[in-house]
Image (cartoon, rainbow, N blue to C red):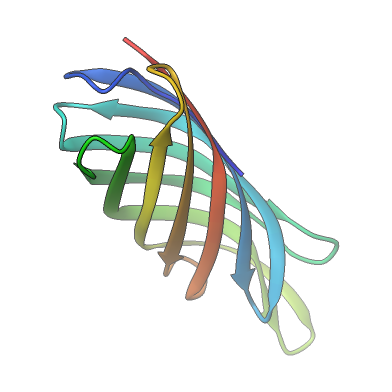
Length: 149
């Protein structure tokens, strides 16, 4: 679930970001979350930086990512489509022959999704994420958004 706090569809908006996700990595699915900030420079271009974590009984990962985003309003439907890409740095336990090894890794991250504006301040969003830090992984992310100026 993605919880994003951001501003109304206007120029120079700020957002708090909190996501819940299912991270598919190392042949397992980890529950994950993000917590960060999003800044919208204009109606179409933004930037997001966040902490990311995922935890299960045997595997954990945490780190940070920063992405630039392109947002495209879908007519006057209240929907925005978006894509974003950038970099991630993660620390985690990776499987090895005799168990797990803790290590740091950097990689790329790419997202694509939709955001629906319920009101000028609140909305919901869903996205698909792919990243290469630690291992090639993907995640399904859903949540709510809260916008502020």
